[in-house]
Length: 56
Image 1 (spheres, helix red, strand yellow):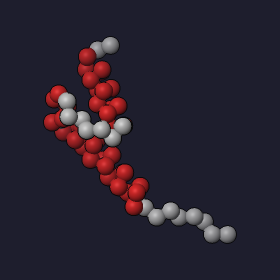
Image 2 (cartoon, rainbow, N blue to C red):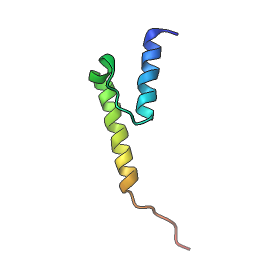
Image 3 (cartoon, rainbow, N blue to C red):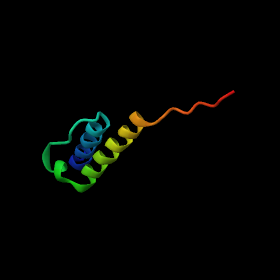
Image 4 (cartoon, helix red, strand yellow):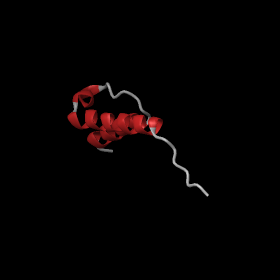
């Protein structure tokens, strides 16, 4: 497997597990920081959203 592909897989796996990506150059990568921020935003909305159920 190509080293760049393996590194990208490792970063995405860490983000999916909601782990800090604090290894290598990826930690300072703008795209990685953006993905981390988007995940955190989605998680915060999921926790604060009100469940809407249809009334019968």
